[in-house]
Length: 245
Image (cartoon, rainbow, N blue to C red; front, side, top):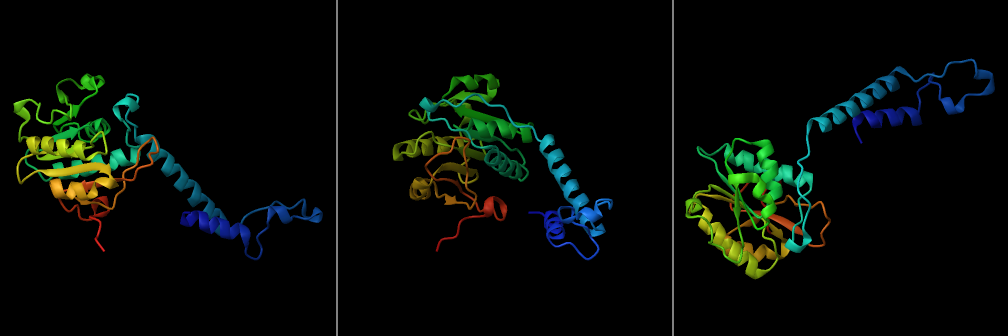
């Protein structure tokens, strides 16, 4: 509840002396014009102004159009808040690099939102679903079962690597980790991994990643708890690294 809403509700529930409450008007007072106190009117104006600002802000943000999920490929798109949050984090990392370049492994939602936020940053989508060939040269076919079957021109060329493995299995993450090592610049790249909570220990073991406080969500509500892991401390962003107790 906003401060304006609180002030207005308080005013209506407990009107000051001299204020007329419409529901309490008696027959003898029917000729009187019901009116709120000046404080209530100001609270009402502020409340309506806040509502208008929220509507205008929502109109300014265009949602990214995506192809339909294919559950046979274990595709589950992020919800809008998650996609925008992760894309904004990648955009913030890009600002710290002289030559930013982003690899999006099996996360087409992120690629789409990233190109909306920072279209000038080079980004490569590695994805099994060939419907995303619509992205032209930004698309590279990728099968995690062949973790290094990738053009040699992409080897060790990405200072930022973001990955969302299609399956929550040990085998899948191990193979995807090989791809991450192939694409990233040794000892220099920022790594972001979106996967299930169940992969927490393996993500730390294979890639030295830590869970962040931010919790990713999907448009299709999933039963598994998902997490975002990073190779770097994001500070105040992404709700920081989760503290161990």
